[in-house]
Length: 490
Ligand code: NAD
Image (cartoon, rainbow, N blue to C red; front, side, top):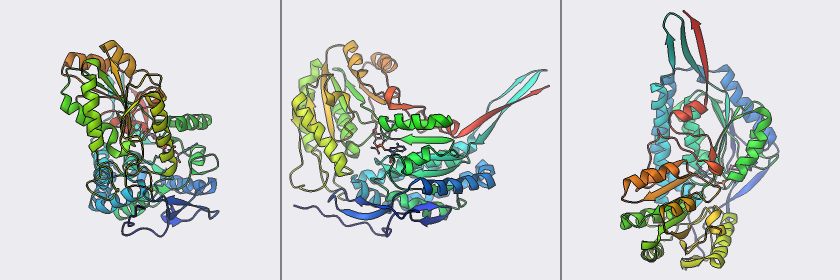
């Protein structure tokens, strides 16, 4: 059967750049096809930005920064605009989620959750800038010292295709809250929901030129690369693959740009024999199959203590087989279509590699009844050896590797045995073990007997190949501002 889907209402005619308050085509007129992940048919054209388009967008953002008023407005005034943005995002969340789900293949219920979180990101940074305090120190009779905090200039924001609108909001919120102006380069696979930003920002009263957007590809000569290499962009906040992060790091080096890098992961979920097994099975199923497995913090390696290994694998495989694969627009769907045929091919190639490296206990192919589009069965491999490619490499789809361990030491060694270090999940009823393991595990974030929910004030980021720097709470404010210390003799 060929799958079909109806495009959401209010689709733009095509996807264009947004520069200096206007929707515009590429200067050279170049466009590319955006595909519907359920059919892989092109459904809309998007403008493909190059160096000249980035130059126009950066010039607009620089003018808005240099001439104001945005950078010098009071935090409370900027916060009012951010709160309006949040209200508008919230009021349009169904439309937004429908577009996101259609464009990216995310299940609609999960896309709605992401839209709500995008609104929350703006509210959170609105609150934070109003509550901001800066250091002041006094040496009695000698000196007073205080800090001037200043926006930096034009921030370049480069984002991936997984949960695109939410991840864009995670950068846009703090970048503009702190008084910078921005150029956003959304991911080329999923530009649809980003086309809503201009309308939202205009309605909220964001001054012209503060927000600019150039669509298109990342490679040399295209939009992403040109943004990184533009001399008037002192900051780059990037989320994407570790390999792309390395390229951007090198390309930004001649200008010593400020860099924030949220990169890939291969995060372990460690299940000890004393864990609440029901909770651990449910959470580790959610951890790798929600958002189609296209989640940077996915717990894609499950390490299980040998005493409960066979029971865990049996229960896990049975539950994975019950995960409902369906159309993105169906509210009962738990796993829908992967974003793009190129990504589908990559994930499927790992499924084949896995069959030669380990024991397949669930899934392993295309689900029945889905002959077109990027549908993959929730797939579980057991007895995965640490040198297997499916243990070491980020797959970024609904595929999980389960590996047994016999001691705490071996669990730690296995957990740390990849180049990545984004998240770790630990399931045990022994709190002392949980805290000691957290301290030793090489990851930017740890969830103990819990799954992915976090306070936005906490640091978000990875270690090793998973990232550079942290965002979240005041760390985002620090990234998007300069801190100038002022000293006065008394
Ligand atoms: P990607 O690296 O292929 O692309 C990300 C963005 O970078 C896109 O907009 C792309 O056009 C652009 N780009 C590509 N090459 C560029 C270059 N040379 N210069 C400038 N820009 C360039 O990543 P993806 O496939 O879109 O996203 C999936 C990856 O993102 C996964 O590895 C995932 O783990 C990671 N991710 C990480 C986090 C996190 O917070 N750590 C969150 C979400 C996704």
